Image 1 (cartoon, rainbow, N blue to C red):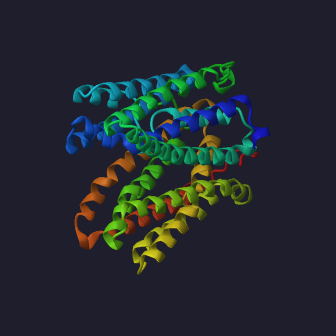
Image 2 (spheres, one colour):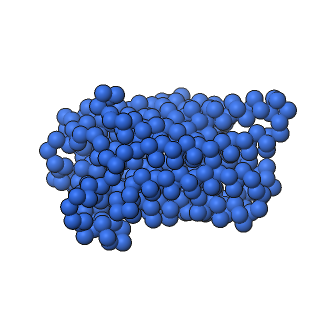
Image 3 (spheres, rainbow, N blue to C red):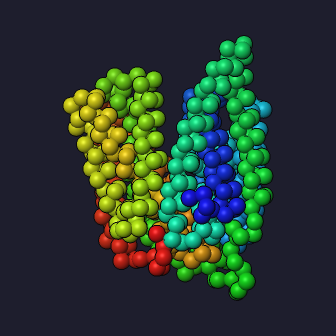
Length: 410
């Protein structure tokens, strides 16, 4: 892959790695740090909810303007908001200031991708590589993020432990990690500043009407809105079995301790990351939509089977099998979106569909929590999640199997 990436391509891979390392690092210590500052559990929950909502709003505003105002500019703005939020979180105990910083800034409480970066980077990356290798590059891009997140999580736990052994208090150790998160925002801004004009939209001709619309999409609006509805459905289903709930289910059902759960899900996420590499080869043979559906659908059948397993070993085995194919649709989904929308609308389209996914995923845990509160219903979230995601697969196939990207896309 290295020979097929330009300098801008390598810079975008570097930004992905740096950012996901920072997110993984922050996700380990953030809740412990906020409780250590004196916030109650309810205040922490409110703060994290507002943070996620704020990240979604920031992403929508910046991504829908990136193709018109400048992708590099919007990426640098996002990095600046990341640095500012990290500094405020690291330097104050004031709850109001924390709310403001969490809502306006870019903070990842879950260790997952947030903010405007992913949609804009996908659009920029699509512009500096050939259409023929886009799915393959996106697969490596996804893998880089998975490895970086795991590395950041491991680094945070190890560093905090070493600092505590050096007679630093847990809060001081965690604050160091928070401030390091802010420093990574500065590194990101420098990487984005080094990008060339090649990552921008070609403005040599007249601007398409969609670039001046509210969401930054015009000709691609119908496709984007249909995909938004489908992606929201998929994310809503997945929200019933987010990793924290799945881990809690293993604890309730089999009494698995957190240390063991950490190993289980570390392995599961590695399986998911490496499975993305197989997606591009499969897509070159059967197409992007078929790859999305034919790998995602069986993974959701396996999801339904997890709570039906009679013992821990079989439940873990089915879970790992599920993760080994569940993420193969990610690079193909991203590549397909870039292929079927106009080049000058790619950042906006990725941003709008990303917001749809985030919104769908944010709603489901409210219902999942109610189900987990009743011992007799703890298996139901798996059944709901698998069924909704299978429905998504069938609707996606029916709606888009005939909508082929231009020749040469893979």
